[in-house]
Length: 90
Figure 1 (tube, helix red, strand yellow):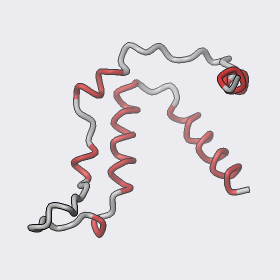
Figure 2: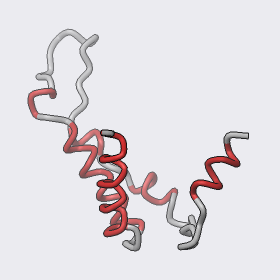
Figure 3: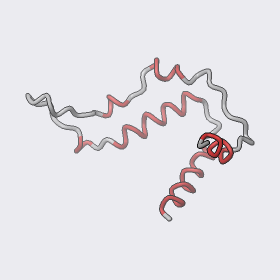
């Protein structure tokens, strides 16, 4: 039940964002990733190098990574996701 709710909610957001530029999508991914790292989870630097902490700025997308998807053409509006999923499982 929760999966269906999440699927519907993400589909609603996708409908709002699917036509924006790739750069905007990448910037949004960066912001969403950063929002998952709470300040309480970021550790203070210590002498113990075995405790590596990820900071929000570590999740920022570099220009190189942002450039990777620039030439990818979007899928057509009538793309059949279910068919693609079933074909890939064969």
